[in-house]
Image (cartoon, rainbow, N blue to C red; front, side, top):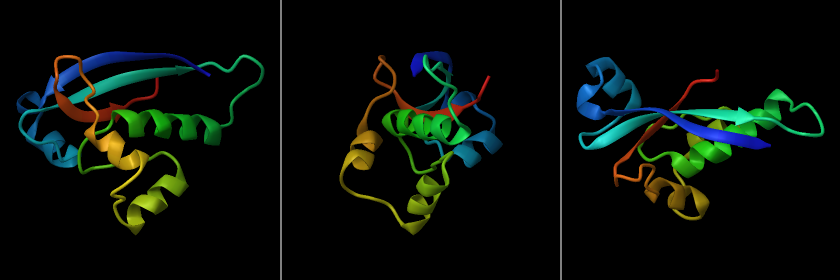
Length: 111
């Protein structure tokens, strides 16, 4: 289903406008990464809910930082209930997302 994931832009915290830094909760030394997902199921059309669930799985694997932007209602409700400190969510928070050893936030734009 996930045909490709492309990094479209990497922007250092210091290069972001102050309003964007505040909205993202990005810290000095972190980067903002704009990625493009291409979802192309072979056998059937994906529903919006299926596409959003897959987006959230990729987001959980890439994201690092305090500000979360979930696409699915179940993820938003779980985030509102409080942070998880174990399992895949905790592992996702510690993953590096850029080969140059930067850590940052993933921002999503559907194209």
